[in-house]
Image 1 (cartoon, rainbow, N blue to C red):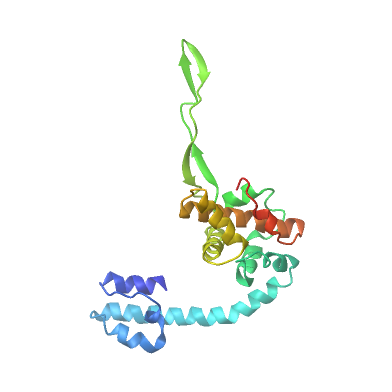
Image 2: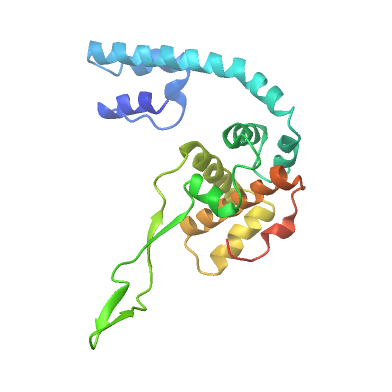
Length: 216
């Protein structure tokens, strides 16, 4: 879908919203493209989109039916903003409950781990080698990760931050502490990932007490 919009925008055609994808409006959108070759490319992208949407409608029931065979799916769906599709994807990507021993391993695998960097750990003082007290510098999130897992937890955090419930309350509390919105959503995504680790490994139900203030 993004490739279709990128094509229009590449030729200076504004295409906000979802109307550009609707079959009933496609002809009018295609007429806005003056170059025949580019217009044909757009037609092929529409054909590809139609094929993928048909395949998606076919495979969605199969995906949900397979995920319902696992008890962890029902437990994961008790977490706010983890619906049937996200639960099924988590089961497929994690594969086994013993894959991650701790939440920090899951954060790193999901691209939510904090990378730090420090240099000049030691220095010479009066001819003696001493350890410096220079603090570590945060370099952002780790780059080597599973992008699908990151999309799942970030998507859940964004949805939770705009909705109602205990996850929204956790997000609002982070903002009240002076945290920037993007950092509050990141903290929420890390919290959701940590909570999602419990149902499969310990077979425990979601408990809002898990959202009480603590190191995320």
